[in-house]
Image (cartoon, rainbow, N blue to C red; front, side, top):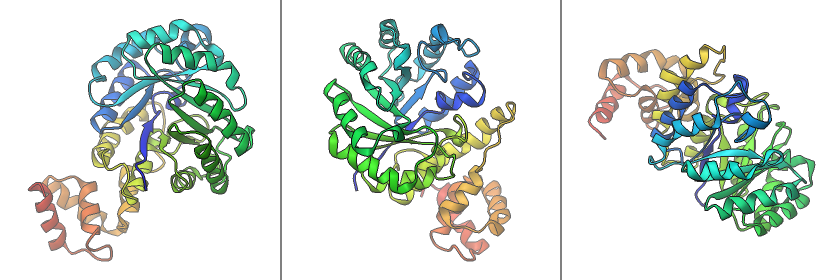
Length: 337
């Protein structure tokens, strides 16, 4: 199976949980955390995309210039950084600002079936030397065949990547499979899938997309996004690790970042993480929660990462790991094994 790439949109779609956009402080913290964990593609800015502050009343967020200034110190960390651009709010100066600020891409978005209003933006983005991504929002408005035809039209305009966006979280896994297959057959560019969790199927839908050839999975930390949220970035990485995918992203560092920095910061907004880093690790490893106390005590005593310790021990014994085994593996981790 070919490599599947991770894209994170916490700072754009996730901004909906706080209103219109995250504060400068949280934006800086999340960009630091995501780039340190080696997330390959990161979309940031306010919830409405570049230009929304000016023309759509997103003044509760920081300005585009503020977000772009924060991002400058993370441009050389190896991640591709970009912003969303609603096709209905397109202004040529948005592309100029993105280019001058060192962004890698702009992701244009319009409802499925409305590609005609986005073609000029795609062409202008490409002319500026940026990558042009596109989101087919509410993808389910079209049949899989119609969506594929629209994707082909956008590819002809110079598009570099296209996203199937399940904006209402209404798709079932068999539908995701069909949309993915049809669009992959129609275009040569990478295809992404963005899944919302309104039916509790975001993870199952991501697996269906993966099994049918998706190139990119588009997620948000702690599931933060509009409505019922997205597939959580950390859950996506954990699931894909089970398929030997996304191994370049440091999952353990990401879980530490969430537990130590992001969860406390979001508590101030009364946001509750539905699947904590510890519970996610238990699912990833197959370790029963009854062993957590012992694992925690030994990880703290020997100063090793709790999440990694649980995973590594569970590779050898999921049923009843002894204290001796846990200590032995903790020592190996501490020694750099």
